[in-house]
Image (cartoon, rainbow over all chains, first blue to last red):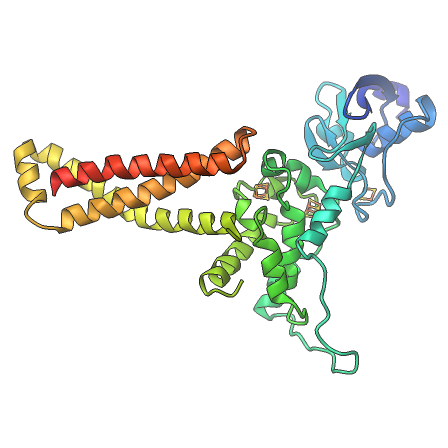
Length: 242
Length: 110
Ligand code: SF4
Ligand code: SF4
Ligand code: FES
């Protein structure tokens, strides 16, 4: 099949920062083309000043997320065919994050909230102590496993309405991460994790409407993790442990 | 107050837990009174015969006032830019008004 027979696509791309406008490019269609391919074509062949972010191109690094026809997606694993209604594709930066330039957002607030939620492992034991043995079918291990494959792409954060209504809300990814840690028996600061997610913009701000679940490209369920945190945090608060 | 949002969340879910069966009870009472064709005097006669009715409805009113005030505060916080202490007091005031109106009604059937 030649490119000509596949025709061209109209690709509208956000240009500028918070203030800006869409610019339309004509990009030749290719079989199995991804949205990231479109952006790369524009940057390489039509306008080298276009700013965007990617690294792995295979859905591992989580850096290529953008808003495609109104929906947050990982662009390297999104086929144009799947999203291009009537040969038109509109590509914008992720919602809920400051725009640096064109399609590149400032991810700092997203990652900062990961830290705010104490979304990092806190070692418990001295180096000399024995390695903890955790059976794979341990219920807590299962909970952690179900939530652990997050690639930090920010798609859920961009999909979450509560983040846009309440900008200091920690958001699905940070809370999901915290959930994996409270279920990790090796972690040395379970209480610290619970305290972090019980702060004013913490887990209880979630409305449970599952837009994060709907859009997470790796199929995680942050809503479920957050529900788990809510339960633990409420119990801890009632017992006066927070 | 430390962790105000969390405690409000707990109060709202807690009040919902209390409200759920009471709403069902209330619907049951309405259905019963309407289909039975009870007069106002007959209804009052029954509610005044025992303290259980005023107690149940009193609890209903308290739970509803807590639940509605907290819920409304969340809606206002998320949909407008009104987020400071004045909103907290406004929500508290709203809850108190509900409580007062509700308790007056309970007093009438007691
Ligand atoms: S379920 Fe919670 S975290 Fe997920 S999108 Fe809704 S409010 Fe955000
Ligand atoms: S939970 Fe899913 S959507 Fe959110 S950052 Fe992780 S991988 Fe991306
Ligand atoms: S470029 Fe790495 S996930 Fe898309």
